[in-house]
Length: 270
Image 1 (spheres, one colour):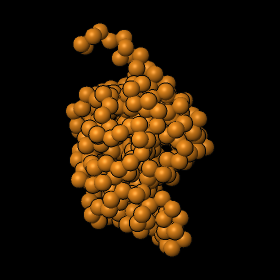
Image 2: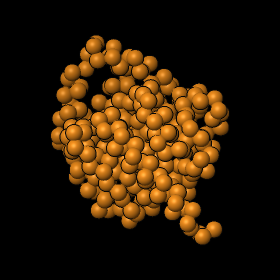
Image 3: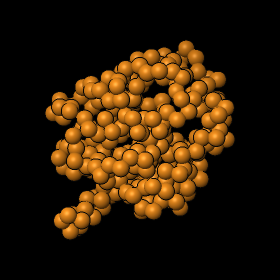
Image 4: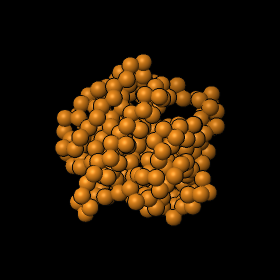
């Protein structure tokens, strides 16, 4: 189990050594576990985790998946179901290492899909709710076209910029980009997991998101048996916590407060 008081370190999950950091009080309520995007990392959350801990009063935990940030390298190419494998094969270890009695999984892009898949595929009573920023549950042509453009633009300059945040920027980029551009990925669709959600969700989507549309949000909102709140943001592209940080912080704080109030009001043993 990690030493929360240390604030940061390395731990093993899914058989790989991963970097992690934490903020706030682990015992204040459910710990918010941040799951980064397809080119993200622990460092690329920048000051958002600290602000999230302050806004919610809760503990916040973030880590870099294998092949990201300063975490251990993993096998390439990524399989088409790499997000499912992360959800079922890595996240259980991560939550065990945190040692929290309850968690809210908060993911961005690929991380949102991983959070959704964990909540829908793994029975874990620690999971009290999920926050999904710019989630993907199926492919869209406009998103695939944007990813193809990113692949064509990748070169020494982009690798140098990514090298500030990733130990092996080319492996990080190729793993993500080539998985999405695999011809078989056009048929990728995990929307069936929505049918198995049994915890509340907050879905946050920018109207100008270049990788996905409100169709992703609508699919989650209409299929989930559990409550779904939607925050649709103007002047917001693929990273709501970057483009509209205060709106995201306010929405997550309200969502977490409602979850805790609901739990507090439930009869003991319910």
